[in-house]
Image 1 (cartoon, one colour):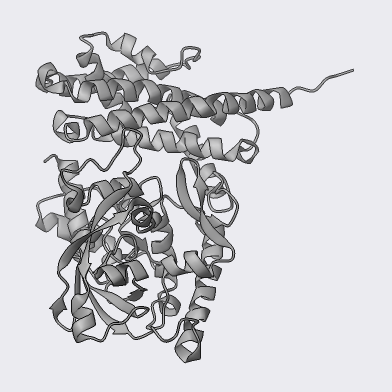
Image 2 (cartoon, one colour; image 1 turned 60 degrees about the vertical axis):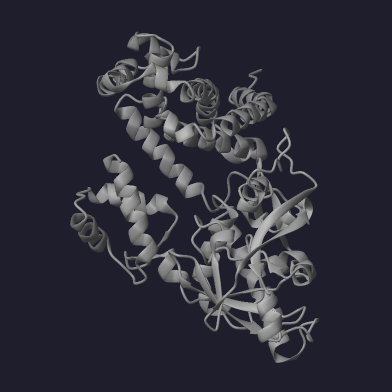
Length: 491
């Protein structure tokens, strides 16, 4: 494990087990005890990128584990689940549990009694509904990864699920036998151990109150109203976020006192029956919670300042001779790809990373060549072409597509008009492609990282090529319009 990997591993361990508010100094001390000495800037970068930490107003932090341990949320089993005698958690514990724990590996406990795991056969539509908050586009992946489907071909070549699949859930027969659980009753849950995914719950006998009447019913109706109000507010302040899970984590953290109450409803029920203004809508090739009937745009009130900040960073890098941005992962993988293709010319490699019609600025090409030469000196002695046969083709295709995506982003960045004037969904897709390709490059250093997923990655890259081809002409047309708008006819 290299230093960066060890740093990430230790920080995730710290975030998963630290329940109290902590400071940057606390993190530094933890790392030093583990023999890791990192710069404050690097630690802050890791904290900001982890997704497991909330920044507090006083400059301190609290982990997701600390924020959500002990907080209440509810699950109302469906008629299918009650009749089948199984609870399928799916996405219903979002955002209260650790996002890296599969739902079938959670543990549910009532009065010291642990529910046993149980698999059930269900139609694919029912299964997908259980994972909608991960995004409909990702739901099939979660279902196919369920151990209950091990050895079964539940995915067609197109990526669609077969008509029937299996899901691992939890046997609720003990609830019927010992706790008078009836159809329509609700499980009120709270995370007891965040790192291990242990959830305590009690039963709220709600079966007689189908229409949310009485004091508890009135409080639940008020809960749905508040949830919608808070969601609409979050759309303006944080936008569509990186995922639905991140959106809900931010929302429930900010409003724990109002939403984490014994009379709480659930996000699932809200979307199915109570939502008036919010729905699962498209965000490029992904899904987000957004205003009902509208697609989530790329630019809004939530990220205008951030875009300006990126522009300032770009200007700073330009002063250092970097006009065309090439992330570290791209430069590293470009050197490895050069070895894979049995080439040896770093100058040729430097030029190949830029668009064909790119006009180099003074010192820019020399800067990139020096960086590549440094990476070459570090990689060359340890590179093994024979051990690169799974990763090499993936790296080659990813770099080719990344070059096109990055080049188009560069052209858009050079336009005089604002990003709001560009086709928003196409712009979203372009930035999503950039992020997905960079993710692939970030872990494509060796066959060990990709050998189990190489086929799925190749299919994914092929899909991204189609997505790029769908949006390229539209965005190039918008760039042409921007260029034309700079000129006025003089009579």
